[in-house]
Image (cartoon, rainbow, N blue to C red):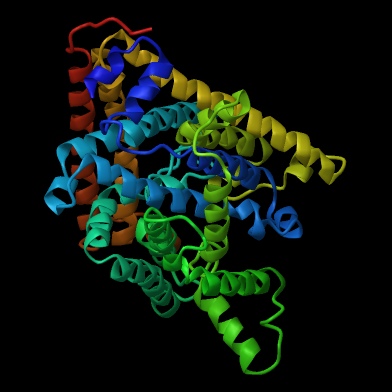
Amino acid sequence: MAEIYEKTSPEEIEEEREQEDGGKRPYYFQLDVLKAVAIAFVVMDHSLTWEIKGYLGSLFWERLSIPFFLIVMGFNMAYSFKYTASPDLKDLYTKEYFKRKIVRYVFPFLILYMASILIGLYFGYLDTSVFLLLLYLPFWGPGNWFIFLLFSSILVFPLVYWSFTKYPKITIILCFLSELSLQLLMHFVFPLPFESQLEGFLVSIIRQIVLFFLPAIGLGLWFSKGYNLFDKRNWFMGIYVPISLIFMTDYTTHFFSSIPGIVGDSFSLIDVIFRGDYTLLFYGYAALLFLAAMMSIPQKATSSVQRFVQRVGRASYHILLFQIFWMSLVYWAASHEAVYYHEIPNFAIEFGFPNVLYYIPFYLLNLTVSFTGGILWYEAEKRVGLKGKPWYKHVWTKRVVCLFGSVMSMIVMMASIEIVSFLTGLTQWGINQPYFILNDVTGPGVMINIMIIIFFIGLCMAFIYKAFTIDDDEIPI
């Protein structure tokens, strides 16, 4: 890995990364195109209200962003493991595998997390709710939920790929059953409306963990063995696509649900069971467009425009992170409640748009800022490695991580206190009693919180001590 950073330019670094597997792994420009389109749709999704998106029929195009990402993730997973590890499970879960994922995904997220804390301190608001356990930022921004999905995939992907190499058809079936079982679990165990905040939190875990999205990821894994739509092994698409179109039409118009009798009742029941628009009922349509793109777009980027799209696709994760940061500021400027309650504000009312056409320059502004910030971040991360060793091995990085750990100790401490107080009933005391009384009921919760405070203050001091005792090192600029 270190020799990658001995190159003399970011372009050479990228070329070396593509040849890490000895030049055997093929490169697909089509995937970069799909990721570039998907991230552009993500910014659009967070720039428009639900009313406008529904009026534009966004389910058939703009809401394809996450399905595209998921299918590409499955496709990339197959090639990543195929050319970097043996199909044995013990060779898939390796130290090197987790190191690559931490460097690629976790470290950039930690940078975003630190930035989120700083802007939260500046504006005087830091969320310490239980949703921090789902990797929500202390100063929330739209798209944050995808981080938990991505990080949980790191733990699951080796097992899924190993199973696919042994039993491909059974694995794909299990991927679909994974979401189906979770949908049924929510329907029967956590029906709407929720009876408590705990139920809402548990449902959030279910709907954000990678297991809920395995059908789309499984499709990408399956297509890695052949992405020709007319290939005999892809025969199921002839059935899956029409089914998806039918349910997508009903989700948008409720046409079939309104038919009297068993047809309408069946569609209504399915609509109740399957929550959201990222479900196995809709992935067939996204898979069709994925295959069409793989078959029609050239495999290599040649023109300057294609090179730019390639760069956007490669920087899509950093663009997502920067978009979360930027849009959190936009949401806060529009409505503080949007950040408090994780919702899209009505920009037209909050910003005083004369008409809905102002959403066009508003989206273009957000797109430009997100793309520019994400690409610059991605390029800077590559250039930092030009000093002779990876940026994450520099002492200055370790010092920043320690300082970040000290701040996070306080954030986690506040979240832990809130969780313990919620579980032990301390948060409900003020509702029933005018004064807080320490007794055998409140005592355990109070004592646990005191121990939490002592532990995290000690941890914070340990991080600070470590940060200022690391030897000096030049900043690789």
